[in-house]
Amino acid sequence: MRTNIIQIGNSQGVILSSDILRKLDLSLKSSVDIKVEDKEILIKPAPRQGWAEAFKEFAASGAEEKFFPDFFEDEDLSWWTWDEEEK
Image (cartoon, rainbow, N blue to C red; front, side):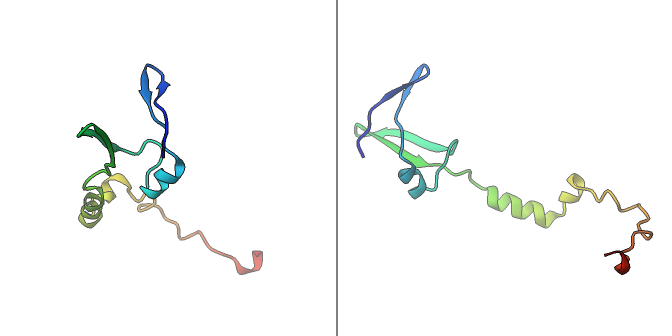
């Protein structure tokens, strides 16, 4: 793919086609690593590291109860009934 360097605000940049982004599983605001190697610009996806493992550990720890308490745990909901005749 051939493209041109364009003005983006006070910076310059290139536009990547949606086909390239799709092939790399990238979207708007995706994190990438950019470096220069042998006079070439390399752009690589930079997924956030460790998030999947961190969420698994969080779920296994039971800590979500501190963040998402059961608001109705002390409520008497015995009066809530479903009357089949009112359908």
